[in-house]
Length: 150
Image 1: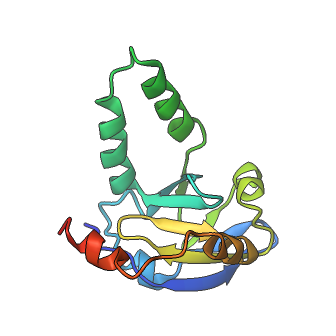
Image 2 (image 1 turned 90 degrees about the horizontal axis):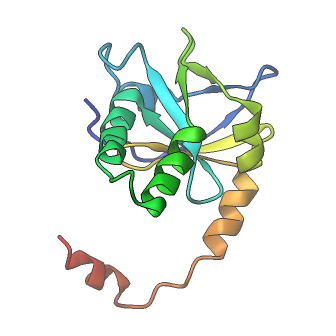
């Protein structure tokens, strides 16, 4: 069972577009996680999202509970499911990344892998930098206001 992913690391794609999932992220997986399988999909930001299979299955169950009679729900389900692929880690902890997903995130050789609680974000380094710099500046009360939800 996933406790939570946190932290960041940089990894290079090899010549076959395999990306090594850092051991610090694989250690949260168990043999019950379909032999270290991730579901990788396009993110809402210009990055890729890698869910451990068990987390993807929980997310997919929430999608299944949306009414398919609503157009916006069908579009949301379609967006997440059509761009998703199950990828099993090889014995070295690498996943073979599909070119269309790499193209979406502009990942060519290097990826920043960020632990985001129950999933990983995969970013092209310059894209991450640009995205961070384009964010709305936080005001002095941002964290205080956010703490109200806890």
